[in-house]
Image (cartoon, rainbow, N blue to C red; front, side, top):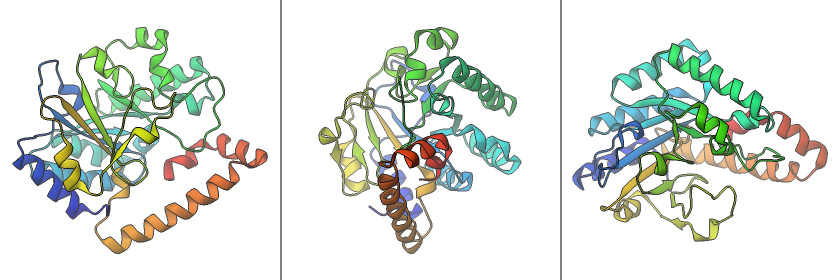
Amino acid sequence: MIFVYKKWAEFCSTLKEKGFISIPACEVKSDSGNYIVLKHDVETDVSHAFRIAQIEKQYGHRGSYYVQAYLLESNNNVELLKKIQQMGHEISYHYDVLDACKGDFEKATEEFEKNKRLFEDNGFNIITVCQHGNPIVERVGYHSNRDFFRNEKVSELYPEISDIMVNFKEKIPTDYLYFSDAGRMFKLIYDPINNDIVNTDDKNIPYKNLDYLSEALDKTKGNIISIHPHRWTESVVVYITKTFIFKVLKFVAKILIKIPFCNKLMSKYYFLAKKV
């Protein structure tokens, strides 16, 4: 699978031809029928997200863009995100507060609230959110950032917010298939709600390319397609180069994380995972 903008444009066109028009997750209702949500985890370079948003708008799609809070520290990023919102897309929070606070729920709640205000102060209402899955964090006492919204006190504190990966199905209520480009290959994720607790990787269904994925979309229930915009590029050469670098970094990380000292160091500087 080659992640170039041309391929995403072709996919968006195919969706439209098949009668699928994406809506933001915040607009999904219990009677939305065979909806589709184009979901985006924005973890670095906002300009890539802006390019993807332009492509989707061209074909009448509106998606959900979950953004790491640190990216709002840049005025240029905020301006690009406002332009994405003006296209009809949802801009919301891609949180990793438990990892940032080493599993301390009290500190994580303070961090979440601070960042929630940051989004709102910039004109982005928080209705749905999505957790960030840091790949190189050593966790003690919790499974992943999803445990934040699994926490009863947190859920009571934010009853108006639903997490795509935790309680979205229950709050709407709705049902959906979840496709992801995690691992740089699109897959139908077997159990997206609990796969951080129980490893079900062997049950995921891979798709060789976007044509195969479009054939797998269910017309009797919802579909969520999750992508990472920073992986997409203008040219095949650039994508292959970036993929090579990614594989080298991943290989090195897998070695270092097995070394006790390096493991702790990598976990301490968890934000490095945002770039991987």
